[in-house]
Amino acid sequence: MNPYYRISLMVCRLTAAGFVLVSVLNLALYWVKSRHDGTAITPGHCAYLSIPLVIGVLILVKSSGLAHRLAQYLDE
Image 1 (cartoon, helix red, strand yellow):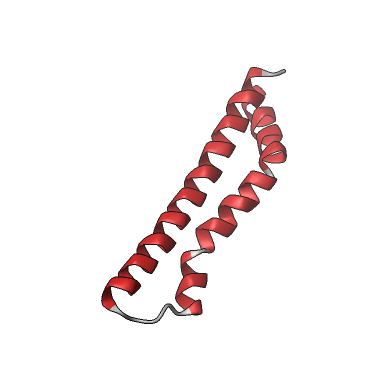
Image 2 (cartoon, rainbow, N blue to C red):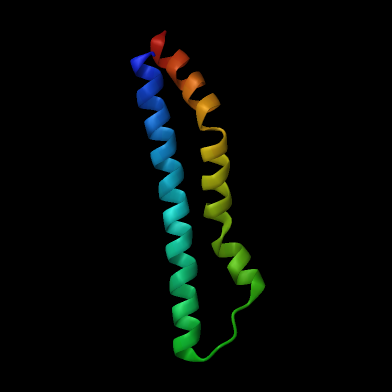
């Protein structure tokens, strides 16, 4: 296995995990803030806060292809 491929795959997966973690923390903090303030949780705000979650899942699904392209770029 090409070392550039392994490194780029790790970077892609780490980036995706970071996006997912940030989104989950944002949603959790929004839920805690809403419970503390006694306000309703709006679906629009939840959808807005879950955009990084969708981006992270897409990066995770496409990580093999992205890593392959990045490894080819670094190999040249």
